[in-house]
Image (cartoon, rainbow, N blue to C red; front, side, top):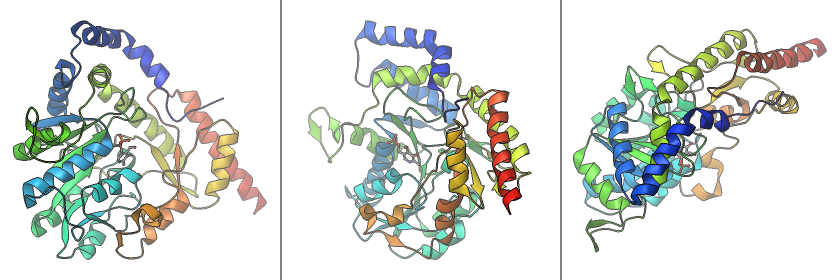
Length: 381
Ligand SMILES: Cc1ncc(COP(=O)(O)O)c(C=O)c1O
């Protein structure tokens, strides 16, 4: 049996007819830049997330960069942050999170994560604050929400902005509110493998702040306030009409697909929590996970288990195999504290296949393979 991490072909079969209609509209109208599909998608996402503004951009990375640049313009009346300005984030994330901080002109500060949720630890954030801190970027890793209440309280108390990296969490919730709609701005990625994925690169920024939304719209269109008149250095970062058409077709199904992900995750968890060496994802009552990834912690033999599952045709992967704080690209970052939990996570996490179209046999095959692996290990001890 082959079990992939995701199954875009099954999804395509479900959206195929609608997709053809959306594409035909694009081809018939021949309006390609910031045209009707983009506007419709933005309106629908704003309603879905419960925010005033949803602004489509070219990628999740751009969603982060443009959010930060807009905050520099809004709060500092400057195009970029200064090299001394510090933005706190996690080292246990995809490169783009910290890359965006560097592109915005500021310096990333890496702080440790909670050992159970793998998300930013608010106590560590508090310890890392200095007079140079300007903002915080929490990442809802694997689609499970960060502790936004204590983080928001810190941000409010110290006059900091907060941008959620919601690249992995479309549709997830925290206390009944959508992830990515809980701070100054939420940055989403529609990279094809994401819960809501395009057929290429795409992204979006959600915000309730009208002046920030205005800056972001200017930035995504070459810094132009009127045609051929730029007030700041911007980007060509508009959401593509074809991607918007794909995303419109997929958006209709996102809640159902996320429910299917949650159902499979619950099946995994019931069985896997009986294995002493395995800790399933840490889900607390205030969370509705989007389960972009189902990631377990393996206390012993993680690499051997991973290789064993791969040999059995089960795609198990490590997200992430290294910390950003260890990468030469971020040599200018400040590292606050030991990052002990983040280092521990690199050694122990393993993401298992989880997509809406997994059937009961496939789930059973993954779980029984993990059980068999540990039975074999226990016999040898
Ligand atoms: C946590 C995180 N942040 C940012 C990004 C960047 O998104 P994109 O690939 O759409 O630029 C990704 C996606 O890979 C991500 O997983």
